[in-house]
Length: 246
Image 1 (cartoon, helix red, strand yellow):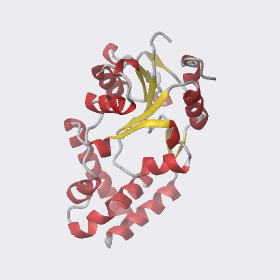
Image 2: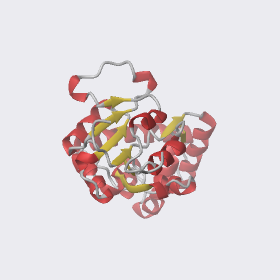
Image 3: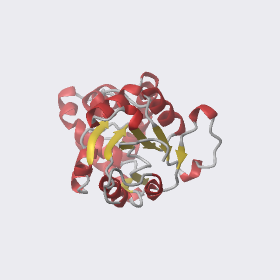
Image 4: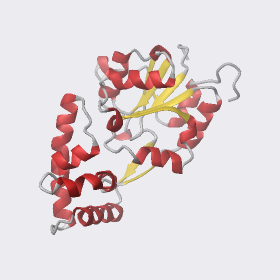
């Protein structure tokens, strides 16, 4: 490893967790959304409109590098025709169910083992992720007994800014009390993750690409320091630090 890396930050989607588009699971979430909202439309019709509105929101979020709070997401973007006093208190649960309507998320191969090993090798660990939910990720970390390994967890939904805005990377490094130059980031997007970490001055950027996109050409300005094909590969590049057991 060419640099003195002290902290390793990881993305969530397509890095620590992968999405399984299981239709029965998705259909159940769509029914729950319709029940919570109280609409008379069918789950399929209503959620198809939600998807259309969400794409419009994402376009705005990408352009401005802003993540709206969940209450604003639902009252302004996804369900503005319903009373605010009804929708706002349901925003967190609606966000959770909306994400489940996309599919079931499971841990990537080696997730727990690699996290534990990197922690035992003496690295500070953190999470930096663009995500619309504030509670799903902390809840998942608690259920899987992973929260104790992470010094810094920064979600765009809580911070208000999205990758590749360098401020989200810098704030995550500040919370971990590590100089950005001694931080590595593991993401899945050649464009967003490389440009953001570079602008923040991170010492190393690692991409674990979607297998379907692994062979796509990558512009020179978006080339990471390292491309890996499994979380397990991280253990080959981050040896034990300062006498920690590996």
